[in-house]
Each structure stands twice: as structure tokens, then as C-alpha cells.
Image (cartoon, rainbow, N blue to C red; front, side, top):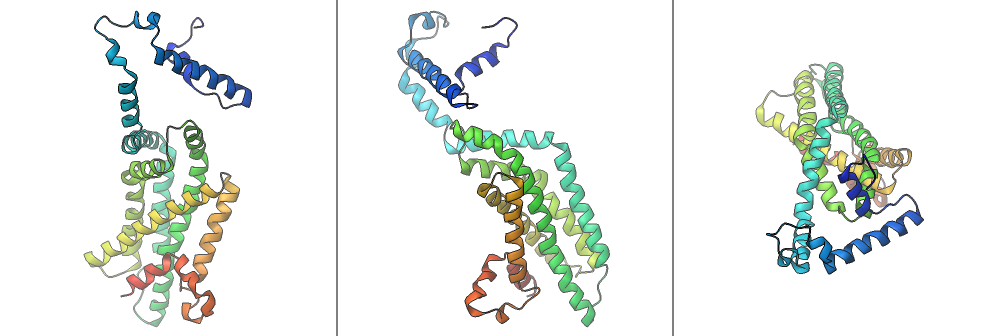
Length: 285
């Protein structure tokens, strides 16, 4: 080991696969293979450095394999990545602040525009616009914001997936589980509280929590749609193009602008690609 070098960094570099170039990858793979072979054979000079209480049975290959399989299980892997993502999210104060500011500012601006809507014919038309603003525009901002953040975080996932330490399902579950309390729940809640009462909707608890539940579902759909867009392309320009294309498609088919029954019958199926159409059909009951 070089002088004045961190022993832990040295060991990690020694046992890791270098993916910066093909030559470095081949060299590091051969080094890791030799380390694995040396551990399987248990050379005497390694065992002599172990404590006297340690026995050969403690380092049996079968036992080590069972432990490895258990540790690398999907459940344990998801828990570990959830804890790490939670810590990273807490440290990302700028991202948390930006999401909260977006929720509060969007709720205030939308509530100001649709402030205390009347119940006459003009008010009914305005309420339709308020519903579209609540179920589409708020989700659109979240969609773009999550797409941008994922294009940054996905580089770490790609590297770890190549090394075999993370699976796609554990990455998706851990990302949402770690951010549910910090972002996924408070962002739609703050927006719902501000916009719902400023717009003058019915002041009933059941009605409000129905509104909030739908906002929460729309938020989760938006962040997962962003995951799909980033899965198609790692570049933000292309991923955001996919996000805008999907949002434009569902905006034209959601029923707010054109009645779905007036669309050609062979094209009417596109209404099922718009998750906002379910919002208006449920909330208008």
C-alpha cells in the first residue's frame, strides 16, 4: 500500500472493477478473479493473521455463499438502497426546498387566478379550468423536475447495475419509499390545502381528502412517468422531449378541451393514455 494512503480506499480500489476503459476493466477483472481464487483456497499466510478464536469453518465457502445470497436478496437490497437514498435526499436541501417552493407558489398562483369561483354558468366554466390546472399543470411541473433530477441520479444507478449491486425494481421502490415522507406526500398536500380553499370548492372534509388523494395519485404517476422517460433516454433533452410528448398527447385526449365522443372512433382509444381523464370522471360524480 502506498504511504499516506487511506487503507479503506486502497482495499476498495483493489477489489473494484474499473470501468473507465476496456483495458482497465480487463485488468481489474483479472485482479478481482485472483482475489476470489485466493480467498477460496484460504492460503495459510491469510489464516495466520486471523484471531486465534477464528476457525476454518467460519470461512467455509458454502457459508459465505449463503450469506452472500441472503445479503444480496431483493428485500435486503431494497432496504439498503432506501436508507441510502433517504440520507442523500435529506442532504439535498436545494432539491427539497425547490419542490416545496414549487408546491406553495403553484398553489398560491393558481388559487389567486381561480379565487372564490362563483356557482353560476361562468363559474362552472371556470371550475372546469381550475380542475385542469389542478390535475394537469401541477403534475406537468413535477414531471419535468423529476425528469431532470433522474438524469443526474441515473448515472450512479447505471454504474452500480453494471457492477451487479442493484436491480431496477429495488432502485424504483427505494427511490419512492425514501422520498414519500419528504416529498411525495407534502408536495401535493400543501398544494391541495392552498388551492382547494382559495378556489372556493366545497368546504367538506370528505370532498377535500378526495381532492388530495387524487392529487397524490397524480403526483406519483408523474414521477413514475419521468422514470419511464429517463429509461428511454439518459439525456435530459431527449427524456424531456418524451415527457412533453406524452403530456401533450394526454392533454388533447383527457376530455377537457375536446369531448372524447367527438373523436374518431378508431382514435378514441387514446383517452386511456391520459391519466387525467380518470380524475374528471371521478371528481365530477
